[in-house]
Length: 303
Ligand code: CP
Ligand code: NVA
Image (tube, rainbow, N blue to C red; front, side, top):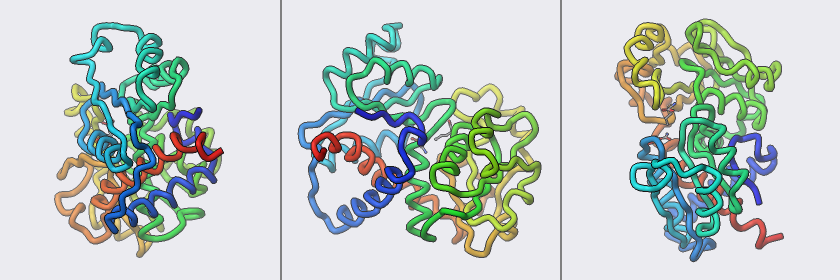
């Protein structure tokens, strides 16, 4: 039984398998092929934060694979009334085949996984968003081929997405340059894990020089709403625009996990720039997570 809490839970070969499988499942879906390896399987989805893409892609993905999904929110389950995580994990994992969790503390999902009898998928914590990286890596592969040896620039907050890009740099073997305002750097231990693959720089221009992929995210993540005004000031020099992309490699692509705030981390016109691949990236959440679900749920049958 395997969990997917960060990209480090899979080997580079396994991640490559998932990306290739996501591309195949996408083609099968486009052809209208019915493929239902997860018939009668159920995904429990615990959302302690809002979501559009993650909820719809997991729910639609399970339906397309022949299974079903149950949406659980703390507002109307005992999770919101203080039932311990350990107890919730023991109970839910006796009823469903796989659990997906979006929450605040990364330690909470680790605790849930420790007591779960079924695979647990991280659908975003304050520290990591590995499912988004599966979609981003699939999208790069589809548009430009292998990312191995390429240069990626992360601009903005050293947040859960940035830290997932650091894990991806290790697993997919690319160079990562990170430009954040002072005081908003990613966790130093996570940076250290990546060794010389990751470099912290002080300006977006330095980060994007020659980059093949440029990515950013909101300046204030879910749970940081109180800091929005202060962050708007501190991040003002970290907006990604078509002019910034002009400093990158001529074949650069731009990604954003979405939702995006036009006029803040992205200029008003950036998502309409031909170098932006954000809609393909969003769609690939569906295909990449179908491949992940198949990997986690079908491997016992195959072995
Ligand atoms: N990118 C992403 O995870 O989007 P949602 O918050 O809408 O799920
Ligand atoms: N960093 C953002 C990502 C949203 C998908 C957040 O945590 O709110």
